[in-house]
Length: 177
Image (tube, rainbow, N blue to C red; front, side, top):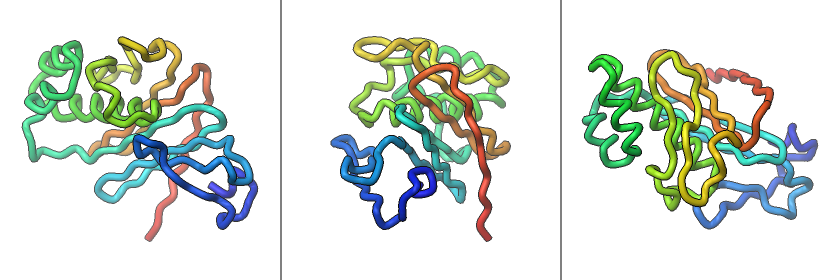
């Protein structure tokens, strides 16, 4: 991050907001960069953006729970219906596409799980471009956000959400041994 801010790493001072999202303190050399992180089963994602809210999530596609049952607990009625309509062999991937998109939006919004997961809808079908379909309540309109899947291979789902439209997104992969 210090490379984005043109300052020594020792000058960066981190904290978290009242919901637990990591933030740079205002007394750092410049606090114009927003960031978010996520990790799962050996993969870590780091996302950076200038002067916008951002959230990122990655999940390893696990089989150790009932995907439809968990969706019924956390997804909106629209998302539950969309997931239930998928062929059985698509449900796991559809669940994790939905989960990472929702988690990335929650993280971008910056209020943690105090933001009800049923207060917004994301799409989840295979082959569709990731998007925020609808928001309810006090949330900004769905069309004020950019949502992208992050290509990580068949065993992972990843999503990025940024407040704003018409953004150019760049992806970089670093591999450590």
